Length: 100
Length: 138
Image 1 (cartoon, each protein chain N blue to C red):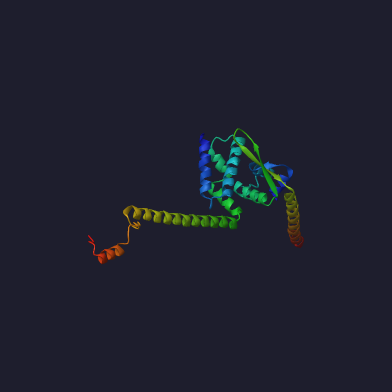
Image 2 (cartoon, rainbow over the protein chains, first blue to last red):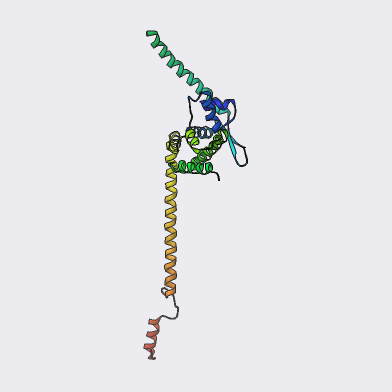
């Protein structure tokens, strides 16, 4: 969901995604490349995102990921589910607090 | 090739060797990892490769997280396909070996005179004819 969220803002390349997440959470959340790339491959397979290469430097080609329409739909669904779950959890926790 | 480049190659080779199966996905992953390492080196002016390992984790950590996130069914499927292809290749190799073997035996027999049809005459018939006519057989 976080990856989809970042890609909804702008097209990004792999390292940029992990770096941005790290910066946004002040180093609190680190997404390992070994975790990120399989997620990106699955999203690409399901048509949620697409990738394109941009030349950077003499020989290097940077692979950017772009969020597609199915990805936007999936992101919205995930966000809805996440809000529902967190609301439920907060509901339970706040009930516990009221008993205290 | 600089020292960092050499160490990067060794690091990526180590990650690759820890993958359960070598396929398109792992190749793609190694290429993406290489790109990420290059970005990190360029962004942070890295002079010691230990900084790269410190940021990305050890080769074991990377391969473990990759395998944990990769669909196990997909890996098993790829390994099965690999096994099927290997079996087919072995069968084809055995068949080819058999064909070449038989061809070699045939050639050997022909060279030694086995199985060569002379077509000269039926010796038994000729001998009988010679016997009945009373001609000298020798």
